[in-house]
Length: 157
Image 1 (cartoon, rainbow, N blue to C red):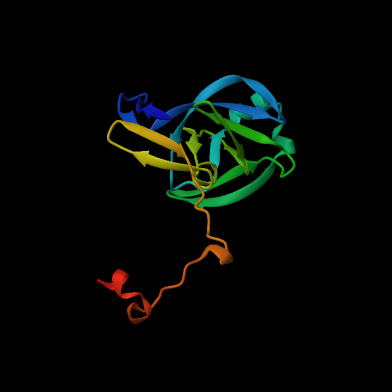
Image 2 (image 1 turned 90 degrees about the vertical axis):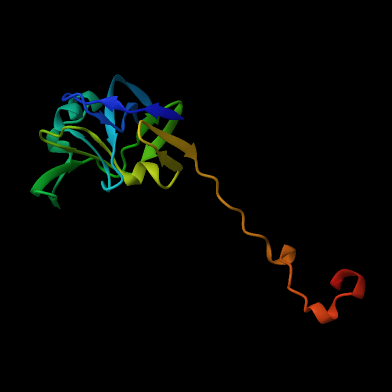
């Protein structure tokens, strides 16, 4: 899934991609963009989006976080909420979704990307590939190194 970088409000190209969301299996009637931010632990949206998820601020867990430039309050969905994010044609479960006031741009954090996707970023595009898990050989299929002196002469030469 390749995405060209988008221009922000100041006209600067950023690794921002379009996304959609589901809550408890229901596709939500809005789309937005998120900045691919490998420095962000979680995906963070502006608090105004909470209502689009059918959430009230009083239903969210409020926590104080230290970030670059000071401290902010983040409002998190409860662990039992099933929140999914659509990146390209793929839907990925978000371990958590956080909201904060005056969040611009929205952020796509590591928890959404790294466990399931490999990411390649270039000067004008970002690409996500489904991560492939390397299979470990079973104990029976592992090969042992054989000392060269024990190999047949036809193989050693």
